[in-house]
Image 1 (cartoon, rainbow, N blue to C red):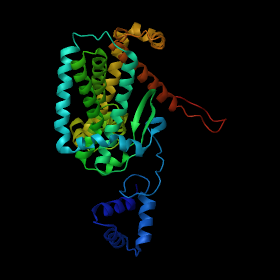
Image 2: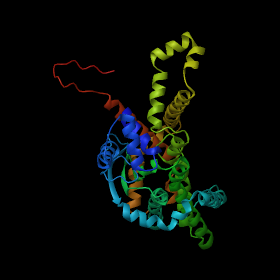
Image 3: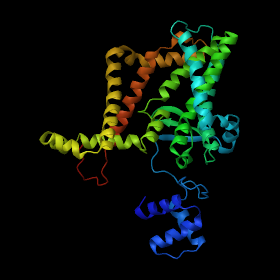
Image 4: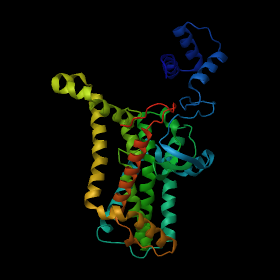
Length: 374
C-alpha cells in the first residue's frame, strides 16, 4: 500500500459516511470529485481486498499463500446457514463463560480417563466419522463468529499446509472487526471443538460407549496443538492480534535474520550496550519470537533423532502398515502411539527444510552464465 492509498483508507475509516470521506479526500489532495468518481477511486484502490464493508469488487488474488492446492468444498451461503444455530454463543458476553464451562467438562473427563483408561471397544467407522465432523465443526466456529459480527466471509475448503492436509475457513473479512472480536473469531474454532468434545464426553458418561471417549480424547489433543503459536493455527492468529502484528511469522523471521547477520553481530560485539539501546522493544520481541521459533523446531528435530531414531527410519513402513490395517478394518486404539505424531512432525519439518533449500537455487536464464550455489 502506497502513501496515497493509506491516506484514503484512513479517511474512510474516520469519516461517518462516504460523502464526508469524499470531501475530506478532496481537501487532502486538492481534488474536485463527484460521488461517482470518488466511489470509482475507492473501488480501484481498495476493492477486492476485504477492507470495505460494502465491497462489490471480486476478490483479488493474493500473491502468496501458505495454503496450497485450495479447493472450496462448502460455499459461503451453506456454511453461514449451518453455523447459525450456534452464532449466539460468539457474543462476547456469552463466549468466555461458555468456553470456560465446556473446557472444565472436557478437562474433568480427560483427567479421569486418559491416564488410566485406554479405550478398547471402539467402532472405528463411527470414530473416524465423528473425527471428520470435528474439522467441519471447527471451521464453522470461525464462520459463525464472522457472520455474528455482520462481516463477509467465504466458504470452507480443503488444502495443504506444507505437506499436511488441512481444512480452512475464509474469514479474511474479520480484519474489519475490533481486536476483541478478532480474538473471539480466532478462538471460535477451538471453542466449537471443545463444545463438541464436551458433548461426546457427556455421551460417554451416559452410555459408557468408549467410541465417544476415544473421539473426545483425540479432540483434546488436537485442541492443544491448535494453541501452538509457531504454526499458522488458531494460537498463532490470537498472538498476532494480541500484539497487533500482521504477518507475525514473516516479520519475526526477518528480524531474527537481520539480528544474526554478520554486520549486526560485529556491531554488537563492538558496542553491546549501544547496540541494544538502538533496537526497539518491538524488534526485540520479534527477534525473541523468531529465536524461539527456530529453537523449538530445531529442538524437536534433534530430540526426535536422538530418542526415536529407529522409529524415524521405520516410519514409512509403519505408516504403510497402519494404512493396510485401516483398509482391512483391523486398526485398534493401541496401534497408535504419541511418538508417531512426533516422528510425523519431524518428517514435515525435514521436507519443509528441503523445499526451502531447493527454492534458494536459482537457475540462470543465460545458459552461458556461471551457476554457483551457497
